[in-house]
Image (cartoon, rainbow, N blue to C red; front, side):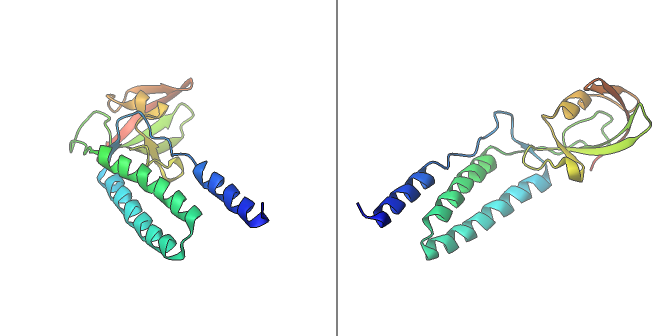
Length: 157
């Protein structure tokens, strides 16, 4: 068996073994921004796929195809949810300012799983913090990991 044939076989096995991206079992709630991000990701992946196909880059085609399947499924299952303007209860898509028992304030926007980025102030609607906040009003307390957070402000963004 030639060495080139072995490498090609190994390459095919590597491509076949990339696996699928796991898709959450939770409802795929999205904000308007989240929906736009999914659409942008799909457009970018389609462009990337066309370039990879021109180069006949099989590994890249496999990776992009996997990501396209993921984002296509996420787009198909996306449920746009817009918070009621002026709502006094914490809901999906709202911004929530909290004050910890140590006096420190934080602000979170509750968004879809794919849009969540705690480092940028967004948390997933299925995160423990979001679940503790849903349905509460300004002045109420949410307890997460044994720490108390008072809701001090709600916003539509």
